[in-house]
Length: 180
Image 1 (cartoon, one colour):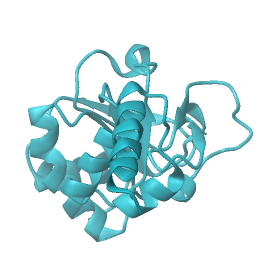
Image 2: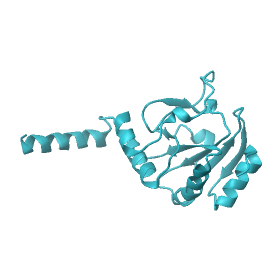
Image 3: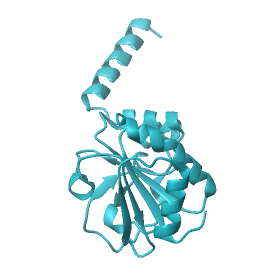
Image 4: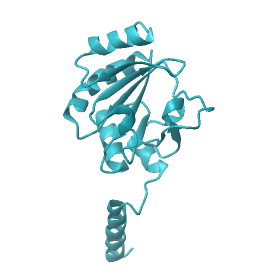
């Protein structure tokens, strides 16, 4: 194969990717270790609300249709407090007693979100807020964590950093009724 042609093709693909004209596929997501959103419990009869694409590029989820018990964590890779609390969510995920859903906001692009999630080992489904459509729902700052019960009712909103496993586990017990 001609090296010049290969280099030009790679250069063109890179330029298209950066410009947003080349969209990554779900195969790209699978290679990056992003978890499928098919595991999110959703009331499919809820069709109105904020529809968010999954970071795996395979589906969209109407946020208002999410059913728990679930902990929804809104974060951005650029947010230091968000990065500080990730180990607490990783520990919660190990318990396998409560579902976690992440919402990645204000990311440069889907590839940056996937790289961050993969690097941090975030092994739960992640939704991608492409155009900051959740701002009206969650507010301007992150991190934000919501606790949603089986009926889809938000039982608690944590604004700001979750400082420890004890705090997160206590909130799961108190607001979702799950003893960890």
